[in-house]
Length: 233
Length: 233
DNA sequence: CGAAAAAATTGATACACTATTGATCTACAT
DNA sequence: ATGTAGATCAATAGTGTATCAATTTTTTCG
Picture 1 (spheres, rainbow over the protein chains, first blue to last red):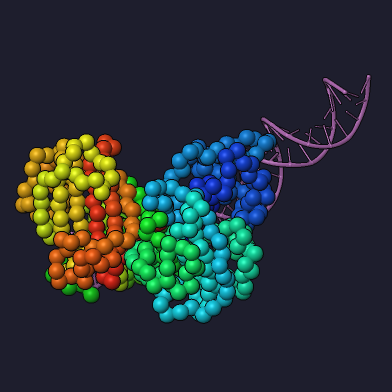
Picture 2 (picture 1 turned 135 degrees about the horizontal axis):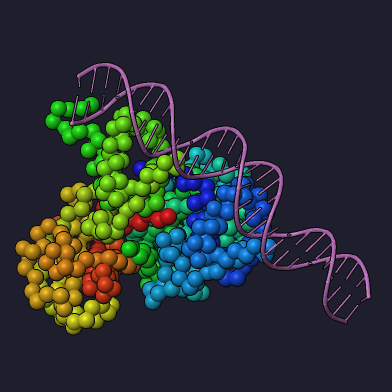
Protein backbone atom coordinates (compact mmCIF):
# COMPACT_ATOMS: atom_id res chain seq x y z
CA UNK A 1 0.00 0.00 0.00
CA UNK A 2 2.91 2.29 -0.67
CA UNK A 3 1.73 5.35 -2.52
CA UNK A 4 3.88 5.35 -5.61
CA UNK A 5 3.62 9.00 -6.47
CA UNK A 6 6.91 10.23 -7.76
CA UNK A 7 8.86 12.91 -5.98
CA UNK A 8 9.88 16.04 -7.90
CA UNK A 9 12.59 15.22 -10.41
CA UNK A 10 15.25 17.39 -8.77
CA UNK A 11 14.68 15.54 -5.52
CA UNK A 12 14.98 12.16 -7.23
CA UNK A 13 18.27 13.17 -8.83
CA UNK A 14 19.56 14.50 -5.54
CA UNK A 15 18.77 11.30 -3.69
CA UNK A 16 20.25 9.20 -6.46
CA UNK A 17 23.51 11.11 -6.30
CA UNK A 18 23.64 10.91 -2.52
CA UNK A 19 23.14 7.18 -2.78
CA UNK A 20 25.94 6.92 -5.31
CA UNK A 21 28.24 8.83 -3.01
CA UNK A 22 27.25 6.68 -0.04
CA UNK A 23 27.87 3.53 -2.07
CA UNK A 24 31.37 4.72 -2.92
CA UNK A 25 30.61 5.05 -6.62
CA UNK A 26 31.44 8.74 -6.53
CA UNK A 27 34.78 9.32 -4.89
CA UNK A 28 35.88 12.34 -2.95
CA UNK A 29 37.29 15.05 -5.19
CA UNK A 30 35.72 13.55 -8.28
CA UNK A 31 34.63 16.03 -10.91
CA UNK A 32 31.14 15.73 -12.28
CA UNK A 33 30.44 16.21 -15.98
CA UNK A 34 29.52 19.75 -17.06
CA UNK A 35 25.98 20.60 -16.08
CA UNK A 36 24.85 20.78 -19.70
CA UNK A 37 26.20 17.30 -20.48
CA UNK A 38 24.98 15.80 -17.26
CA UNK A 39 21.50 17.19 -17.71
CA UNK A 40 21.40 15.89 -21.26
CA UNK A 41 22.52 12.40 -20.26
CA UNK A 42 19.92 12.33 -17.51
CA UNK A 43 17.31 13.62 -19.92
CA UNK A 44 16.40 16.64 -17.83
CA UNK A 45 16.80 20.40 -18.12
CA UNK A 46 19.82 22.17 -16.70
CA UNK A 47 17.69 24.18 -14.30
CA UNK A 48 16.29 21.01 -12.82
CA UNK A 49 19.71 19.44 -12.45
CA UNK A 50 20.96 22.61 -10.81
CA UNK A 51 18.27 22.31 -8.16
CA UNK A 52 19.55 18.86 -7.32
CA UNK A 53 23.16 20.05 -7.25
CA UNK A 54 22.17 22.98 -5.05
CA UNK A 55 20.71 20.48 -2.62
CA UNK A 56 23.91 18.46 -2.54
CA UNK A 57 25.85 21.67 -2.01
CA UNK A 58 23.57 22.59 0.89
CA UNK A 59 24.24 19.17 2.40
CA UNK A 60 27.95 19.79 2.09
CA UNK A 61 28.52 16.99 -0.38
CA UNK A 62 29.43 19.13 -3.35
CA UNK A 63 31.74 22.01 -4.10
CA UNK A 64 30.68 24.18 -7.00
CA UNK A 65 33.26 26.36 -8.72
CA UNK A 66 32.09 28.65 -11.44
CA UNK A 67 34.02 28.16 -14.62
CA UNK A 68 35.65 25.03 -13.28
CA UNK A 69 33.15 22.37 -12.33
CA UNK A 70 31.30 20.52 -9.63
CA UNK A 71 33.37 18.43 -7.25
CA UNK A 72 32.30 15.72 -4.83
CA UNK A 73 33.12 16.45 -1.21
CA UNK A 74 32.06 13.29 0.53
CA UNK A 75 31.88 13.52 4.27
CA UNK A 76 33.09 10.47 6.15
CA UNK A 77 29.68 9.29 7.20
CA UNK A 78 26.92 9.94 4.72
CA UNK A 79 23.31 9.70 5.85
CA UNK A 80 22.63 6.02 6.29
CA UNK A 81 19.00 6.58 5.37
CA UNK A 82 19.87 6.20 1.74
CA UNK A 83 21.96 3.05 1.99
CA UNK A 84 20.05 0.13 0.55
CA UNK A 85 22.49 -2.65 1.33
CA UNK A 86 21.97 -4.00 4.82
CA UNK A 87 24.19 -7.06 5.31
CA UNK A 88 27.17 -6.68 7.59
CA UNK A 89 29.67 -9.07 9.11
CA UNK A 90 28.75 -10.29 12.59
CA UNK A 91 31.70 -8.32 13.91
CA UNK A 92 30.54 -5.29 11.92
CA UNK A 93 31.30 -3.76 8.54
CA UNK A 94 32.85 -5.68 5.66
CA UNK A 95 33.20 -4.41 2.10
CA UNK A 96 30.45 -5.99 0.00
CA UNK A 97 31.35 -7.66 -3.29
CA UNK A 98 29.45 -9.95 -5.62
CA UNK A 99 30.20 -12.69 -8.16
CA UNK A 100 27.62 -13.51 -10.78
CA UNK A 101 26.74 -17.20 -10.95
CA UNK A 102 24.13 -17.16 -13.67
CA UNK A 103 21.90 -14.83 -15.68
CA UNK A 104 18.85 -15.69 -17.71
CA UNK A 105 15.40 -14.64 -18.78
CA UNK A 106 12.74 -16.89 -17.26
CA UNK A 107 9.06 -16.95 -16.45
CA UNK A 108 8.29 -15.65 -12.98
CA UNK A 109 7.30 -18.37 -10.57
CA UNK A 110 4.33 -18.24 -8.24
CA UNK A 111 6.38 -18.35 -5.06
CA UNK A 112 7.27 -14.71 -5.53
CA UNK A 113 5.11 -11.66 -4.86
CA UNK A 114 3.61 -9.56 -7.62
CA UNK A 115 6.00 -7.03 -9.09
CA UNK A 116 6.49 -5.36 -12.45
CA UNK A 117 4.25 -5.79 -15.46
CA UNK A 118 5.77 -8.64 -17.43
CA UNK A 119 5.14 -12.36 -16.85
CA UNK A 120 8.86 -12.87 -17.32
CA UNK A 121 11.92 -11.58 -15.54
CA UNK A 122 15.68 -11.64 -15.65
CA UNK A 123 17.04 -13.90 -12.97
CA UNK A 124 20.51 -13.08 -11.68
CA UNK A 125 22.09 -15.41 -9.18
CA UNK A 126 25.06 -14.12 -7.27
CA UNK A 127 27.39 -15.04 -4.51
CA UNK A 128 27.85 -12.18 -2.08
CA UNK A 129 30.92 -11.69 0.02
CA UNK A 130 31.69 -9.33 2.85
CA UNK A 131 35.30 -8.37 3.31
CA UNK A 132 36.25 -11.28 1.07
CA UNK A 133 34.28 -13.87 3.03
CA UNK A 134 31.38 -15.57 1.26
CA UNK A 135 28.33 -14.55 3.24
CA UNK A 136 25.21 -15.06 1.16
CA UNK A 137 23.67 -16.25 -2.06
CA UNK A 138 21.07 -14.16 -3.74
CA UNK A 139 18.63 -14.30 -6.58
CA UNK A 140 17.57 -11.03 -8.14
CA UNK A 141 14.63 -10.77 -10.48
CA UNK A 142 14.40 -7.70 -12.70
CA UNK A 143 11.05 -7.34 -14.40
CA UNK A 144 11.20 -8.40 -18.04
CA UNK A 145 9.66 -5.21 -19.38
CA UNK A 146 12.80 -3.10 -19.15
CA UNK A 147 15.08 -4.94 -21.55
CA UNK A 148 14.97 -8.03 -23.75
CA UNK A 149 18.20 -9.65 -22.78
CA UNK A 150 20.93 -9.19 -20.22
CA UNK A 151 24.47 -10.29 -21.00
CA UNK A 152 26.55 -11.50 -18.07
CA UNK A 153 29.25 -9.02 -19.09
CA UNK A 154 26.82 -6.15 -18.54
CA UNK A 155 26.87 -6.87 -14.84
CA UNK A 156 30.64 -6.82 -14.54
CA UNK A 157 30.77 -4.02 -12.03
CA UNK A 158 27.47 -3.33 -10.37
CA UNK A 159 23.88 -4.24 -10.99
CA UNK A 160 22.85 -0.83 -9.77
CA UNK A 161 25.11 0.88 -12.30
CA UNK A 162 23.73 -1.27 -15.06
CA UNK A 163 20.19 -0.31 -14.17
CA UNK A 164 21.01 3.34 -14.30
CA UNK A 165 23.31 3.50 -17.30
CA UNK A 166 21.76 0.94 -19.58
CA UNK A 167 18.14 1.06 -18.50
CA UNK A 168 17.78 4.59 -17.16
CA UNK A 169 16.17 3.43 -13.95
CA UNK A 170 17.31 3.23 -10.36
CA UNK A 171 15.91 1.83 -7.16
CA UNK A 172 14.63 4.70 -5.05
CA UNK A 173 12.89 2.77 -2.30
CA UNK A 174 12.62 -0.79 -1.13
CA UNK A 175 10.91 -3.00 1.38
CA UNK A 176 12.81 -5.80 3.07
CA UNK A 177 11.19 -8.71 4.84
CA UNK A 178 13.55 -10.83 6.88
CA UNK A 179 12.88 -14.35 8.10
CA UNK A 180 14.37 -17.82 8.01
CA UNK A 181 14.42 -20.27 5.10
CA UNK A 182 16.43 -23.21 3.87
CA UNK A 183 19.35 -22.44 1.58
CA UNK A 184 18.45 -23.21 -2.06
CA UNK A 185 19.72 -26.29 -3.88
CA UNK A 186 21.88 -24.19 -6.18
CA UNK A 187 23.99 -22.89 -3.29
CA UNK A 188 27.62 -23.34 -4.38
CA UNK A 189 29.71 -25.78 -2.39
CA UNK A 190 32.50 -24.65 -0.11
CA UNK A 191 30.39 -22.20 1.85
CA UNK A 192 29.28 -22.14 5.42
CA UNK A 193 25.90 -22.36 3.77
CA UNK A 194 24.75 -25.80 2.62
CA UNK A 195 21.60 -26.54 0.59
CA UNK A 196 18.66 -27.36 2.81
CA UNK A 197 20.17 -25.82 5.93
CA UNK A 198 18.31 -22.99 7.72
CA UNK A 199 19.65 -19.59 6.73
CA UNK A 200 18.72 -15.97 7.20
CA UNK A 201 16.31 -15.05 4.45
CA UNK A 202 15.70 -11.58 3.03
CA UNK A 203 13.00 -10.80 0.52
CA UNK A 204 13.10 -7.40 -1.09
CA UNK A 205 10.85 -5.51 -3.44
CA UNK A 206 12.45 -2.50 -5.06
CA UNK A 207 10.65 0.45 -6.60
CA UNK A 208 12.12 2.71 -9.23
CA UNK A 209 12.22 6.49 -9.11
CA UNK A 210 8.77 6.70 -10.66
CA UNK A 211 7.14 4.24 -8.37
CA UNK A 212 7.11 1.07 -10.44
CA UNK A 213 8.00 -2.15 -8.65
CA UNK A 214 10.78 -3.32 -10.91
CA UNK A 215 12.81 -5.70 -8.83
CA UNK A 216 12.34 -8.61 -6.51
CA UNK A 217 15.21 -10.32 -4.77
CA UNK A 218 15.77 -12.99 -2.17
CA UNK A 219 18.93 -13.51 -0.25
CA UNK A 220 19.98 -16.43 1.91
CA UNK A 221 22.70 -15.41 4.31
CA UNK A 222 24.96 -17.40 6.58
CA UNK A 223 23.99 -16.25 10.06
CA UNK A 224 27.34 -17.32 11.47
CA UNK A 225 29.03 -14.82 9.15
CA UNK A 226 26.59 -11.99 8.53
CA UNK A 227 23.67 -10.10 10.04
CA UNK A 228 20.94 -8.00 8.54
CA UNK A 229 21.43 -4.60 10.13
CA UNK A 230 18.91 -1.81 10.49
CA UNK A 231 19.67 1.46 12.22
CA UNK A 232 16.65 3.38 13.38
CA UNK A 233 16.41 6.98 14.44
CA UNK B 1 -21.19 4.77 3.48
CA UNK B 2 -21.53 7.13 6.39
CA UNK B 3 -23.10 5.45 9.36
CA UNK B 4 -24.75 7.62 11.94
CA UNK B 5 -22.53 6.24 14.64
CA UNK B 6 -19.25 6.78 12.80
CA UNK B 7 -16.83 9.60 13.40
CA UNK B 8 -16.77 12.41 10.82
CA UNK B 9 -15.10 11.23 7.66
CA UNK B 10 -12.21 13.67 7.87
CA UNK B 11 -11.35 12.37 11.33
CA UNK B 12 -11.39 8.80 10.11
CA UNK B 13 -9.05 9.65 7.25
CA UNK B 14 -6.77 11.59 9.56
CA UNK B 15 -6.49 8.73 12.01
CA UNK B 16 -5.93 6.22 9.26
CA UNK B 17 -2.99 8.24 7.96
CA UNK B 18 -1.58 8.72 11.44
CA UNK B 19 -1.65 4.96 11.98
CA UNK B 20 0.06 4.36 8.65
CA UNK B 21 2.79 6.83 9.50
CA UNK B 22 3.26 5.38 12.98
CA UNK B 23 3.53 1.86 11.59
CA UNK B 24 6.28 2.95 9.23
CA UNK B 25 4.18 2.35 6.15
CA UNK B 26 4.47 5.99 5.19
CA UNK B 27 8.07 7.04 5.14
CA UNK B 28 9.44 10.41 5.98
CA UNK B 29 9.63 12.59 2.89
CA UNK B 30 7.10 10.53 1.01
CA UNK B 31 4.84 12.44 -1.34
CA UNK B 32 1.12 11.89 -1.17
CA UNK B 33 -0.96 11.79 -4.34
CA UNK B 34 -2.45 15.12 -5.48
CA UNK B 35 -5.45 16.03 -3.38
CA UNK B 36 -7.82 15.58 -6.32
CA UNK B 37 -6.57 12.05 -7.02
CA UNK B 38 -6.36 11.06 -3.41
CA UNK B 39 -9.87 12.26 -2.68
CA UNK B 40 -11.18 10.41 -5.70
CA UNK B 41 -9.48 7.15 -4.75
CA UNK B 42 -10.84 7.49 -1.22
CA UNK B 43 -14.27 8.27 -2.60
CA UNK B 44 -14.57 11.57 -0.74
CA UNK B 45 -14.58 15.23 -1.70
CA UNK B 46 -11.43 17.29 -1.82
CA UNK B 47 -12.69 19.62 0.89
CA UNK B 48 -13.14 16.70 3.25
CA UNK B 49 -9.73 15.32 2.53
CA UNK B 50 -8.26 18.75 3.10
CA UNK B 51 -9.70 18.82 6.58
CA UNK B 52 -7.89 15.59 7.34
CA UNK B 53 -4.66 16.89 5.83
CA UNK B 54 -5.00 20.14 7.76
CA UNK B 55 -5.21 18.06 10.93
CA UNK B 56 -2.04 16.14 10.05
CA UNK B 57 -0.34 19.44 9.29
CA UNK B 58 -1.41 20.81 12.66
CA UNK B 59 0.09 17.73 14.30
CA UNK B 60 3.33 18.35 12.45
CA UNK B 61 3.15 15.16 10.43
CA UNK B 62 2.67 16.76 7.06
CA UNK B 63 4.30 19.49 5.06
CA UNK B 64 2.00 21.10 2.55
CA UNK B 65 3.63 22.97 -0.30
CA UNK B 66 1.36 24.80 -2.66
CA UNK B 67 2.08 23.93 -6.24
CA UNK B 68 4.23 20.99 -5.23
CA UNK B 69 2.44 18.48 -3.05
CA UNK B 70 1.89 17.07 0.41
CA UNK B 71 4.89 15.47 2.05
CA UNK B 72 5.07 13.22 5.09
CA UNK B 73 7.19 14.68 7.89
CA UNK B 74 7.30 12.03 10.56
CA UNK B 75 8.99 13.17 13.72
CA UNK B 76 10.71 10.30 15.50
CA UNK B 77 8.91 11.56 18.59
CA UNK B 78 5.55 10.52 17.28
CA UNK B 79 6.50 7.19 15.85
CA UNK B 80 8.73 6.12 18.69
CA UNK B 81 6.26 3.77 20.32
CA UNK B 82 5.31 1.76 17.27
CA UNK B 83 8.00 2.47 14.72
CA UNK B 84 10.69 0.74 16.72
CA UNK B 85 8.79 -2.49 16.52
CA UNK B 86 9.37 -3.96 13.11
CA UNK B 87 7.71 -7.37 13.16
CA UNK B 88 4.75 -7.91 10.88
CA UNK B 89 2.67 -10.90 9.97
CA UNK B 90 3.84 -12.77 6.89
CA UNK B 91 0.69 -11.65 5.12
CA UNK B 92 1.33 -8.08 6.31
CA UNK B 93 0.32 -5.89 9.23
CA UNK B 94 -1.02 -7.23 12.50
CA UNK B 95 -1.63 -5.22 15.66
CA UNK B 96 1.27 -5.84 18.05
CA UNK B 97 0.53 -6.79 21.66
CA UNK B 98 2.68 -8.17 24.45
CA UNK B 99 2.25 -10.29 27.56
CA UNK B 100 4.84 -10.13 30.29
CA UNK B 101 6.17 -13.53 31.34
CA UNK B 102 8.67 -12.48 33.96
CA UNK B 103 10.49 -9.45 35.33
CA UNK B 104 13.57 -9.41 37.50
CA UNK B 105 16.84 -7.71 38.29
CA UNK B 106 19.79 -9.91 37.36
CA UNK B 107 23.46 -9.71 36.57
CA UNK B 108 24.18 -9.19 32.90
CA UNK B 109 25.55 -12.26 31.18
CA UNK B 110 28.56 -12.33 28.89
CA UNK B 111 26.64 -13.44 25.81
CA UNK B 112 25.32 -9.92 25.40
CA UNK B 113 27.12 -6.87 24.04
CA UNK B 114 28.26 -4.04 26.26
CA UNK B 115 25.56 -1.54 27.08
CA UNK B 116 24.76 0.80 29.95
CA UNK B 117 26.94 1.40 32.98
CA UNK B 118 25.69 -1.06 35.58
CA UNK B 119 26.78 -4.71 35.90
CA UNK B 120 23.14 -5.55 36.47
CA UNK B 121 20.01 -5.10 34.45
CA UNK B 122 16.27 -5.59 34.54
CA UNK B 123 15.30 -8.58 32.48
CA UNK B 124 11.79 -8.54 31.03
CA UNK B 125 10.61 -11.60 29.18
CA UNK B 126 7.55 -11.19 27.03
CA UNK B 127 5.42 -13.07 24.59
CA UNK B 128 4.65 -10.97 21.57
CA UNK B 129 1.58 -11.42 19.42
CA UNK B 130 0.55 -9.93 16.13
CA UNK B 131 -3.13 -9.62 15.46
CA UNK B 132 -3.73 -12.01 18.36
CA UNK B 133 -1.37 -14.69 17.06
CA UNK B 134 1.71 -15.50 19.15
CA UNK B 135 4.63 -14.55 16.96
CA UNK B 136 7.73 -14.13 19.08
CA UNK B 137 9.34 -14.30 22.49
CA UNK B 138 11.62 -11.54 23.60
CA UNK B 139 13.98 -10.68 26.38
CA UNK B 140 14.57 -7.03 27.12
CA UNK B 141 17.38 -5.84 29.34
CA UNK B 142 17.16 -2.34 30.73
CA UNK B 143 20.38 -1.17 32.31
CA UNK B 144 20.25 -1.32 36.10
CA UNK B 145 21.33 2.26 36.64
CA UNK B 146 17.99 3.84 35.88
CA UNK B 147 15.82 2.35 38.62
CA UNK B 148 16.19 -0.07 41.50
CA UNK B 149 13.22 -2.26 40.95
CA UNK B 150 10.54 -2.77 38.31
CA UNK B 151 7.11 -4.09 39.24
CA UNK B 152 5.36 -6.24 36.66
CA UNK B 153 2.31 -3.98 36.97
CA UNK B 154 4.39 -1.05 35.74
CA UNK B 155 4.64 -2.65 32.34
CA UNK B 156 0.94 -3.15 31.82
CA UNK B 157 0.67 -1.23 28.58
CA UNK B 158 3.90 -0.34 26.88
CA UNK B 159 7.50 -0.61 27.92
CA UNK B 160 8.43 2.58 26.14
CA UNK B 161 5.62 4.42 27.85
CA UNK B 162 7.02 3.24 31.18
CA UNK B 163 10.49 4.43 30.24
CA UNK B 164 9.06 7.78 29.37
CA UNK B 165 6.70 8.36 32.27
CA UNK B 166 8.45 6.66 35.14
CA UNK B 167 12.08 7.04 34.20
CA UNK B 168 12.06 10.15 32.03
CA UNK B 169 14.02 8.50 29.25
CA UNK B 170 13.08 7.40 25.81
CA UNK B 171 14.74 5.44 23.07
CA UNK B 172 15.72 7.87 20.35
CA UNK B 173 17.95 5.61 18.29
CA UNK B 174 18.35 1.88 17.90
CA UNK B 175 20.32 -0.66 15.96
CA UNK B 176 18.80 -3.97 14.99
CA UNK B 177 20.82 -6.95 13.90
CA UNK B 178 18.83 -9.80 12.43
CA UNK B 179 20.01 -13.36 12.04
CA UNK B 180 19.04 -16.90 12.98
CA UNK B 181 19.25 -18.58 16.39
CA UNK B 182 17.63 -21.42 18.29
CA UNK B 183 14.60 -20.53 20.36
CA UNK B 184 15.49 -20.30 24.09
CA UNK B 185 14.62 -23.00 26.59
CA UNK B 186 12.10 -20.74 28.35
CA UNK B 187 9.94 -20.47 25.24
CA UNK B 188 6.37 -21.14 26.43
CA UNK B 189 4.71 -24.25 25.07
CA UNK B 190 1.84 -24.08 22.62
CA UNK B 191 3.64 -21.88 20.13
CA UNK B 192 4.83 -22.57 16.63
CA UNK B 193 8.16 -21.89 18.27
CA UNK B 194 9.75 -24.78 20.22
CA UNK B 195 12.90 -24.55 22.32
CA UNK B 196 15.98 -25.45 20.32
CA UNK B 197 14.33 -24.90 16.95
CA UNK B 198 15.82 -22.35 14.52
CA UNK B 199 14.01 -19.04 14.70
CA UNK B 200 14.43 -15.55 13.37
CA UNK B 201 16.64 -13.67 15.82
CA UNK B 202 16.73 -9.92 16.39
CA UNK B 203 19.28 -8.23 18.62
CA UNK B 204 18.71 -4.61 19.41
CA UNK B 205 20.68 -1.96 21.23
CA UNK B 206 18.70 1.14 22.12
CA UNK B 207 20.16 4.54 22.90
CA UNK B 208 18.35 7.20 24.89
CA UNK B 209 17.88 10.79 23.89
CA UNK B 210 21.23 11.72 25.42
CA UNK B 211 23.20 9.03 23.72
CA UNK B 212 23.52 6.44 26.49
CA UNK B 213 23.00 2.83 25.49
CA UNK B 214 20.28 1.92 27.94
CA UNK B 215 18.62 -1.12 26.51
CA UNK B 216 19.51 -4.42 24.95
CA UNK B 217 16.92 -6.83 23.67
CA UNK B 218 16.75 -10.07 21.79
CA UNK B 219 13.73 -11.45 20.05
CA UNK B 220 13.13 -14.91 18.65
CA UNK B 221 10.33 -14.90 16.11
CA UNK B 222 8.44 -17.66 14.38
CA UNK B 223 9.32 -17.24 10.72
CA UNK B 224 6.18 -19.06 9.64
CA UNK B 225 4.11 -16.36 11.33
CA UNK B 226 6.12 -13.15 11.23
CA UNK B 227 8.76 -11.25 9.28
CA UNK B 228 11.13 -8.50 10.26
CA UNK B 229 10.17 -5.66 7.95
CA UNK B 230 12.27 -2.70 6.97
CA UNK B 231 11.19 -0.03 4.54
CA UNK B 232 14.00 1.91 2.99
CA UNK B 233 14.35 5.02 0.92
C1' DC C 1 60.85 29.90 -23.84
C1' DG C 2 57.49 32.59 -21.47
C1' DA C 3 54.17 35.95 -20.66
C1' DA C 4 50.14 38.14 -22.50
C1' DA C 5 46.02 37.78 -25.21
C1' DA C 6 42.31 35.23 -27.16
C1' DA C 7 39.22 31.41 -27.20
C1' DA C 8 36.75 27.75 -25.19
C1' DT C 9 34.69 25.79 -21.25
C1' DT C 10 31.67 25.94 -17.46
C1' DG C 11 28.87 27.50 -13.61
C1' DA C 12 25.46 31.50 -12.35
C1' DT C 13 21.52 34.15 -13.31
C1' DA C 14 17.41 35.62 -15.58
C1' DC C 15 13.21 35.26 -18.24
C1' DA C 16 9.25 33.20 -20.83
C1' DC C 17 6.13 29.56 -21.02
C1' DT C 18 3.40 25.30 -19.75
C1' DA C 19 1.60 22.02 -16.59
C1' DT C 20 0.72 20.58 -12.06
C1' DT C 21 -1.06 21.22 -7.59
C1' DG C 22 -2.36 23.27 -3.16
C1' DA C 23 -5.38 27.33 -1.38
C1' DT C 24 -9.53 29.78 -1.27
C1' DC C 25 -14.20 30.69 -2.07
C1' DT C 26 -19.13 29.97 -3.22
C1' DA C 27 -23.33 27.25 -3.59
C1' DC C 28 -25.99 23.52 -2.04
C1' DA C 29 -27.62 19.24 0.47
C1' DT C 30 -28.15 16.52 4.61
C1' DA D 1 -21.76 21.29 11.56
C1' DT D 2 -20.45 17.99 7.98
C1' DG D 3 -19.88 16.76 3.44
C1' DT D 4 -20.12 17.40 -1.83
C1' DA D 5 -19.21 19.83 -6.11
C1' DG D 6 -17.21 23.19 -8.87
C1' DA D 7 -14.74 27.48 -10.14
C1' DT D 8 -10.81 30.29 -9.64
C1' DC D 9 -6.39 31.90 -7.77
C1' DA D 10 -1.49 31.34 -6.56
C1' DA D 11 2.74 28.85 -5.89
C1' DT D 12 5.86 25.43 -7.62
C1' DA D 13 8.14 22.30 -11.04
C1' DG D 14 10.08 21.67 -15.22
C1' DT D 15 11.63 22.98 -20.01
C1' DG D 16 14.06 25.93 -23.09
C1' DT D 17 16.83 29.78 -24.31
C1' DA D 18 19.80 33.60 -23.74
C1' DT D 19 23.37 36.05 -21.31
C1' DC D 20 26.89 36.98 -17.88
C1' DA D 21 31.03 35.77 -15.14
C1' DA D 22 34.72 32.92 -13.56
C1' DT D 23 38.05 29.57 -14.85
C1' DT D 24 40.85 26.86 -17.91
C1' DT D 25 42.99 26.01 -22.19
C1' DT D 26 44.99 27.42 -26.40
C1' DT D 27 47.15 30.61 -29.29
C1' DT D 28 49.95 34.49 -30.27
C1' DC D 29 53.96 37.15 -30.16
C1' DG D 30 58.26 39.21 -28.43
